[in-house]
Length: 315
Ligand SMILES: NC(=O)c1ccc[n+]([C@@H]2O[C@H](COP(=O)([O-])OP(=O)(O)OC[C@H]3O[C@@H](n4cnc5c(N)ncnc54)[C@H](O)[C@@H]3O)[C@@H](O)[C@H]2O)c1
Image 1: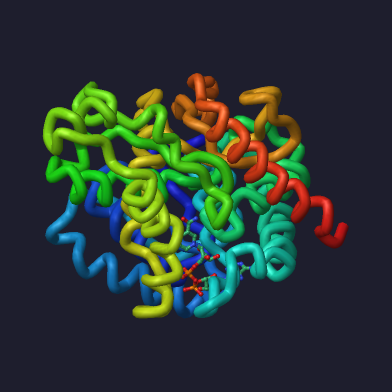
Image 2: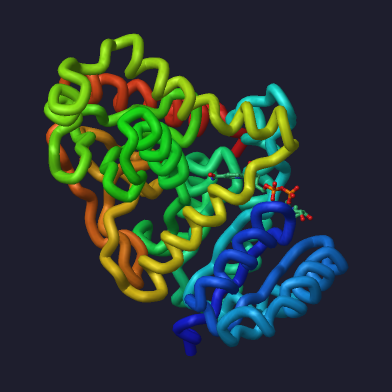
């Protein structure tokens, strides 16, 4: 039987262990199990985290194995090779597809009602692969997608407009990667459309160059962080805490997670990020907002990038 607050994290590297750390502090999970090829690493991370338990809400943390996936409510997959400096997310494909298939074979050889959240890159492609090889309902396998990119977008807009990021509503959709799309037409601050907000505060709209500059920073964020410190893990782990909250607390939160498009925005047979309602079953429904013509075209270009990769993958 599923333990409603049990989380299995596969991959106890930078991202997996930081997700565990973030979840531990959130009080969302009652049990966190770390699973890694490198068992010693998983045990070391669990030990280190346990030493902080005096300062956190009660939670059992330990290293485990795939049997722990059977009764988990949430399985987070962070295992795999990570981007090397200068390497694009898509270069990782073949290496991580093989790892993803091996992990999914382990999970699906046990009966499980869990929701799976893929984090390993290229996250959209691997979400698609995981859905294909598992035979599970598509809504129960999603990717962290552009939740992090949307947060980066909000942060940069908040700095530009000098307001709290929590009052900025802005979405990045499409691929979690170079072809991702900023949805300027849906961007608003405290309910005021961005254009109107700019008029009120600066007396003018942002120029196209200013907008492109802000979005370029979003798109290149991961590259800059990886160049400076080798990996990104804090931002994504906080994004994961948000996604885990939507699932474990059945929140019906709107998040730009990676999901299987099934006619949404005119897209089919590809996983990419769209604004969706996320609850204890995973994806409840996609919110089909009206995009501008430019955004719609960019979203279709992004889907094509992903479909081309899927088509080129070794079987
Ligand atoms: N989606 C996002 O927003 C986002 C953000 C940051 C990183 N990532 C991705 O997350 C992944 C992990 O990054 P990281 O920095 O934690 O890497 P890392 O190298 O620190 O950790 C990866 C871990 O996976 C383990 N592993 C490898 N193959 C395995 C297998 N078959 N079964 C179990 N464990 C296995 C390794 O032993 C290692 O501990 C990368 O693909 C990275 O690109 C995604």
